[in-house]
Image 1 (tube, one colour):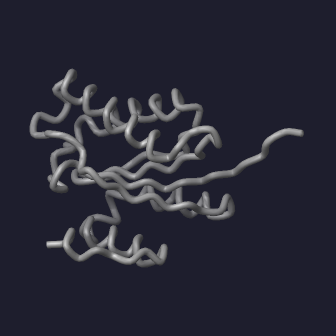
Image 2: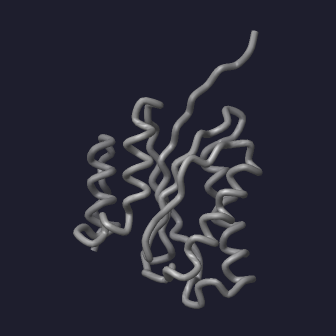
Length: 148
């Protein structure tokens, strides 16, 4: 008997204090690096994109990998890469928390379009507005202490 899984995850992470430090010039390099970290964790990156103050990771999680461990590895490895390459001089680290949402494979095309369209999306919506909506749409109760 074989194991069959389909664990599509949409993850959202932000720099410490949600600072807009991820400049446009090096973000694509950061995404390529994170892509490799995800692959090294036996998972399949689907799409990675974001804005100056956050990153969206759409991926298919391998069933032997714990989501929290994968994101910890992404944050630790990318922090080291950012510092080593001086990619984002004002970057001091990633925010402690993150958002993680599971989806059906049927939703993948819509999610790819959503993650791809981050630049356009954030011309009209702030990260906090977007994040609040993601949480509410997923039925997650928001702790208002973390919202200014």
